[in-house]
Length: 293
Image (cartoon, rainbow, N blue to C red; front, side, top):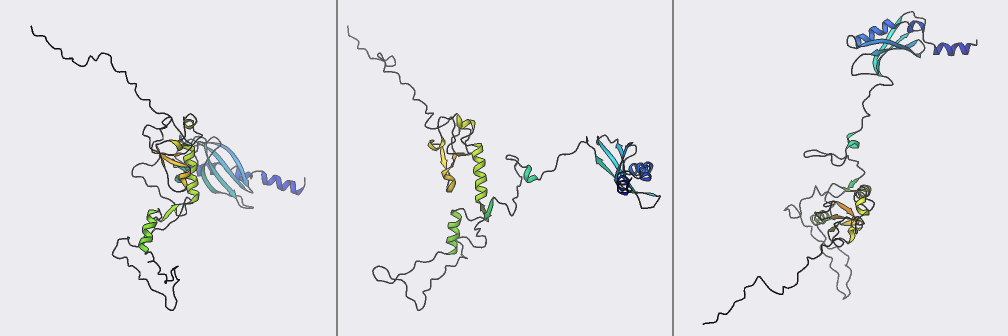
């Protein structure tokens, strides 16, 4: 037998002194566990040169399939086995808790209730910086100072068609710019990014789009329905809001090619029939003249 073969076999064969240290390992397991919770010795597992792990059954009712693992070691040329560690580890058939998932990935639509707060990350890809105007006063505030228009010295302004010097208009104030930005929806610290807009469009089309069973059986599309309230901006070309109280999509964002049975032009209620005029009107009293005798 070659030296390499003997070396390989010695590394895979558990150390004899470490393998026989069952009592030492059991004592360490009983010290870590509750009294009577350490069961029979299961096996000795080779971990490395002069390192062996002893496995004991766990008798805890809530830890079925788990086992106590006690690792012992021996120094080179030493005859004394020392204790390394004692832990409780799950076995192959152990009952384990599901893998932890962050709350941001567990959250589903409809999970929020009254009083719940849903924070957004500072680097959320669905949002991008906007014009907040937090440091500027309101448009009608007394702190707003109107800048005075000054004419440049030494330069003549451009002339108009009639030859007179062009007088530039009054430049907009900062308060006016903030007011316009608020009307355009830009008066917020962050606004919806193109990525967030795309995610919202895909989500809305999946719930109220042309591929839903309701739209497949609808008599008409929402783009020709009178109950559709169009959106503003680029979403106007694809989506709107349903305003039909009897529709299952009332108050929801729907695609223009979505549809339901409450279409305003495809489900028009027929007019009630009008009966013809009676030949003899029994509801009217005809006066009769009495002859004098």
